[in-house]
Length: 431
Image 1 (cartoon, rainbow, N blue to C red):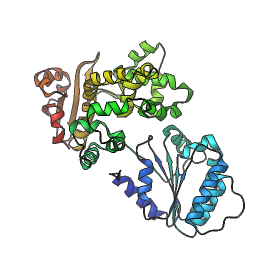
Image 2 (cartoon, rainbow, N blue to C red):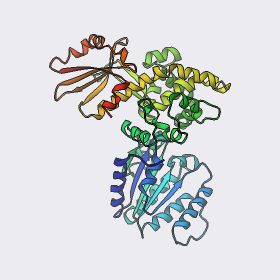
Image 3 (cartoon, helix red, strand yellow):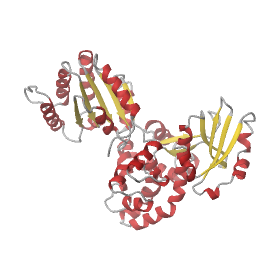
Image 4 (tube, rainbow, N blue to C red):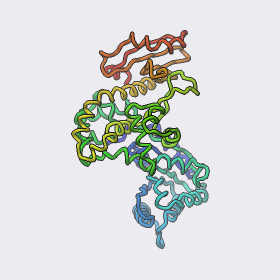
């Protein structure tokens, strides 16, 4: 699959590369698995002198053996003696970089925590010694977000304050997804919900919803364990409670009291960590709510994880017994309802992309009354968009929308209000 977008990230890396001519620079790239971190780094180093090290889960001396082979293949340099510690490899590269500019990519950098945690303090010591006299751009990639934050942002850690820049790789924008699908003759408005696994669907030439479901829900499909694989390293041995919370949020139990009533336990600490440490969920308040307002909902930020908890984790018993037909039937029955939630999120992104509004959000009142899918305001021009969003345009009701929005609109008497019904047919208007 060809490389798409990431222009801002490539530009940032190029800027740092030129700065590294005078003094070594350290860049951290993080983001969840399969988001495109490695592809970004390898695209950037095309036509540059570079080394790529992948930190596999194996003994340190075996890693060093692999890395020394790569160095010998790339550089004509004598390597004397036995090298069985990573820090020896790292010092060798820093010495090479004193003579010529070099990019070193270390992928899955957080894995040293299980292989040899002392590597981090050893790297810090050598980095401080060689930084000013080497010409190296060090790119450190990690997919366990909480560990990467700990390594570089916790003041007690040896590499705290050493990174010159940090890049967090986000999912593709809707515009980029459309471009990719069009290039492979697979674009339809309905397909905009599959961005996380575009490469798999493109390779299989599958773009219809029923075909996508059949591909994902079958024996030995890695999608069945993907959510667990993505998060279990983050959560550790307490993943069961976190997974229960995420399953409930994905199923519509989006406020704390509803979740606690089901789990029969206080989950405040879990929600805080899911939001601020792991960045899996997002706290949502009604549009124009006071900063300290108590009306709060939670949503899962990642589309695939929301899908996985809603349909796959929730039906784990059926998967364990091999009843994939049952899960496919549930998916095909409920997917349109689920798609409605995605459509709402999609329009929030599209409206934000117009740059016409400085505030965008949902609105509801206590008890989930008078829910409004989207409100956007331009406080400088005093304009406001109030929108109802439905998959089926026949279900849009502007009269009902005006009734539900009376309370919030009354607080903006001097604003020009634009009431709109948005359906799947309107997406192209914003792409």
